[in-house]
Length: 439
Ligand code: PLP
Picture 1 (cartoon, rainbow, N blue to C red):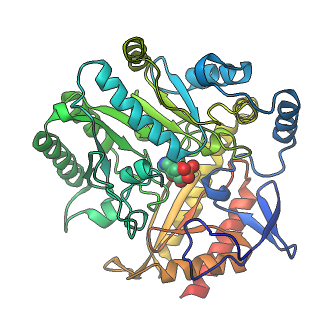
Picture 2 (cartoon, protein in one colour; picture 1 turned 180 degrees about the horizontal axis):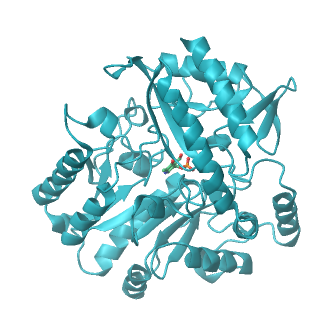
């Protein structure tokens, strides 16, 4: 245990909980204690643990073809099939798919493809990307440049601004609205800020606006209704592409197949997928772009030669096979409909916490939600740091449930899509007990 350097962990606090196995919506530690996995791992184990079909699929694919790369003209059938299936599912027109291993590297791919595309259509100066405050898009140097959370930048002394990332407001009404500002006024103000930023920088220098339809790591921010309609109108006016980072929100998580549908985003030009794409049985991601962007890159490639980007494991056949099977199970077992039904129940139950003295706001859609813990319920005054959130998360763990403290003092919930009503009740009861212990 002591030889590991842990990701996103304070070096002073090493890991103490050894997770040994999982089954359905539960995981078990090395002492045999059971935990309800109320964050689906890291927002990813949609079909839960120990799914025999996925295990057999991986095993069969390993026997048949454990590895083959996709560089320089090679391909394999399971990769082709997965790309076809995904292309037919996503709301991106004539979608073309580039496979990677993680959400972060998929976003890096997108950054490069954007530049390659705008070079191809003779607009090399159109390379800047607008991202929002408090967004999370990954941790590689390029994807961390998109991420708008301080801890992902602090102490690295890296030129995160060098890629031309511009920042605009997080659409969080509860935290960012001015006194007495209505939701409609809030939307108008922050969308106007977006337009002013575009005018200041020059629309011909801005390639895309990246959004998580509903955020995850920054505390499950659900923008007020109407926000994306106005955002899309501005982007269309200035010919700026909408890039939906659906690493968390895709595949039934928010009550629809894609988060875009839930929040009213129509036809994004680009989409990032990972996590639930394979129910996290194997690492895989997909950078999805519109067909006409791909066509322009084909022409560019004819002139400049190789598209010099790709990972050894781009289109790993075992990951592709598992992802393909995951999508098949989603459809065959109507998982998205189930998630929409259970999600409505989960939101109803989560909203009961608004009456708890520690809770300032309850947010969420479908099967993703958060409760924000506050120092003063009346004024909404936040806690100065994440201590209380971490305490509540630890209390949940002691009570046999895993959730996650995010964005300081919000507790996030994102159970596997396969949970039933009584498991949602279990999640609520364990949270209630833990909050009372946190008071
Ligand atoms: N984008 C979003 C919206 C995410 O939530 C995440 C991870 O949580 C990422 C990108 C990065 O994905 P990964 O951790 O697989 O690199």
